[in-house]
Amino acid sequence: MMKKMLDTPPLISLACLLLLLLLSCAAAQSPIFDMKGDELETGVQYRIRSATWGIREGDLTADNLDTCPLNVVLANSGPGLPVTFHLPDASKEASRPVLTSTNLNIQFVTASAGSSCNDGGVWAARIDPILGAFLVSTGGELGALISTFQIKPQGAFHKLVYCVVGLCKDLTILDGQRLGTTFDPLGSHKPLIVIFERVQADDDATIKIKMPTDE
Image 1 (tube, rainbow, N blue to C red):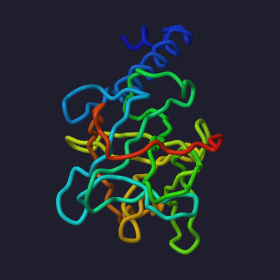
Image 2: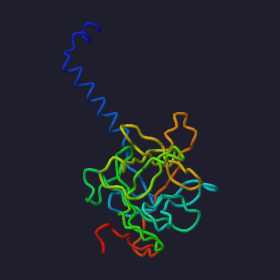
Image 3: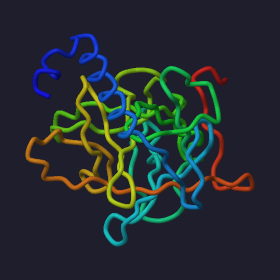
Image 4: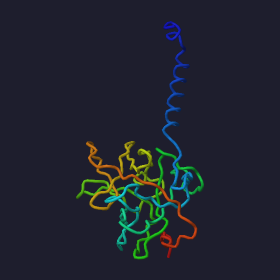
């Protein structure tokens, strides 16, 4: 038996290795389901909600400051702002499945009435030198590196991660309510555990965000 293994042609061994790698990658990606059990899709509006109760309860939304970019924060009450998910290689295609551990962009499709920011609502992570952390805000760009996120399984729920230079770190709540990550090698911050609620057609809680090209 050992002799047969040693006599295995290198090309066959390499092909088997590549097949195993492909299978492992496929196993790492799985569908994501919203609160009603439907698969998440690109181009569809969702609210991202904390799956926990208490201090981290609420929806992700944007603050209502008049300056750009708008900070992505965890709201203590009221519905959060809807988002859409975009794949970097097909940002304008709708109805494609959103899978775990897949690079994607996240975009607010609405803005609070109290904001005059018109940067398009795409999430991005930028370094805050005071906190020594990457904080998530609007003003990103579809397909840009600073706007690359993933959704990963976390027990029975999911978590959001920010990915840069091949490294993905859990997003958590920093400085009271801001979404971000510290890239702390000790992992002292617990990830924000989330669920997804599809926005209904008759939802009138928000208004459409102003895009940079709007007058």
